[in-house]
Amino acid sequence: MSVPIAIEDSRAEAKLITGLLRTNGLAALVSPNAVSRLEPQLQLQGVRVPAARSQEAAAPELLADRAGAS
Image (cartoon, rainbow, N blue to C red; front, top):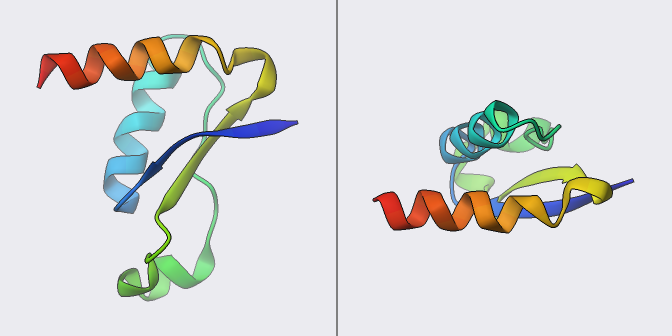
């Protein structure tokens, strides 16, 4: 079962988050949403980045490190 790790404003940002998580050994992905790919302005609720529930605890630390680096 997966849980949302992050909700980003754009698909591009979600892909960057997914890459960061994967690089650190987490099995994350960009939640598929055919409508937002065809019409990016319909991403009003954001783009979800889910990961396995068993990896949920590691993600916030990685994302905090990313936020601190910017």
